Amino acid sequence: MKTFEDAREILRASYRRHNEKRLKKSIKFLKVPPVQELPPLKSKTVFKCKAVTLSGNQCQYMASCGEYCKRHYVSKELLELN
Image 1: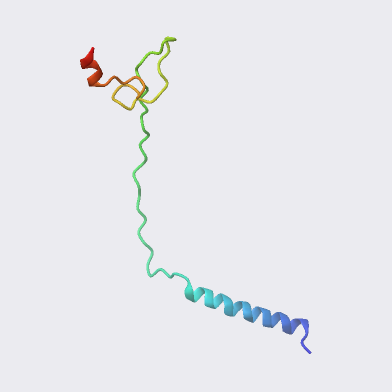
Image 2 (image 1 turned 90 degrees about the vertical axis):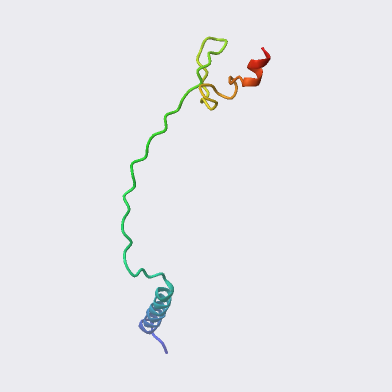
C-alpha cells in the first residue's frame, strides 16, 4: 500500500519530468544581443488653425492644410472663382 510520502515522491518526480520536457522545447539564446540605445523621442509641435471664428475666438482644430484646418482651408480653385 502506498503511503502519503510515496505519493508525494511520485508527484515530485512527475513534475520534474514535465519541467525537463518543457525546458527542452523552450528557446535558448546562444549569445546575448547587444543593447541598442535609442535616440530620445522628439515631441511633436501641434499647430493650431489660424482662422478666427465668428465669435472672435481662434479655431481649436489642428492645422492640416498649411496654416488652416480642413474646415477653414480655401482651395485655389475657389479663390480663382472669386
